[in-house]
Length: 312
Ligand SMILES: [Zn+2]
Image 1 (cartoon, rainbow, N blue to C red):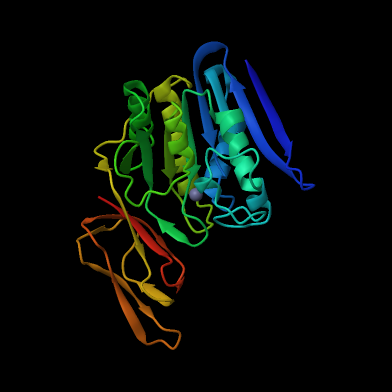
Image 2 (image 1 turned 30 degrees about the vertical axis):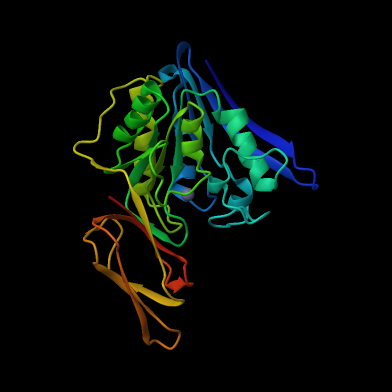
């Protein structure tokens, strides 16, 4: 049994260094290898708090196999309080996997996160929440389409994550509005079962959000045989497969009339956009029946800027 805390350091060649804080928990008996990443987005705080608390409170006697935890994956974003992107090159790390050793700072960071930490694990949980200007209803998105075994493990991460809305992304299906370069989906593409878990929002650190993240970490580890104790599946979750993103038709002040987690009908109005003088400039409707998972909580929107993501 062993617990190690290590700061992985990689010079990037511009006088800068990538630093990745990693905790490794090794049990006294064999078991799978789990990887948990938090803080890919450095202003998403409940995942970081939960990952740190899990490492601090975990009893090694309860661990089987190996659990590797990255407490803050994008440390430069965390330190500088930069939402969505890494401030060094302005790139969103969760669009850059599997990374590039000869690329920009964020591309090198994601290269090391994947090749040095995630690759070779049995499964990977990527912990997120709504960012500084996003409001969000808890959900888990999991990847399938690799093999029967990997698909079943990914589905199990989702079912035992504690999240009420579960979204399946199959590698062989039309990705719809799903972006490229996602951390968890890259893992699945390389044979590591994977899912992203989202609970929390808007830079807040509510105990409820941290507890939701902690429940997910512990319950999934129990289900997979990495942690002692009984795992509990989510009772009656809602399953989805397809994303639709709604963008702002015009620039202006966005006034929404729905909350994250709302079930909507095609054509339903979800808000309107005023011009900078307060005059109505556009109405915003959803294109399909489904559930809104997250929206911008900011009222400042640009033409073609992100408003919300929904699933059906
Ligand atoms: Zn995120």
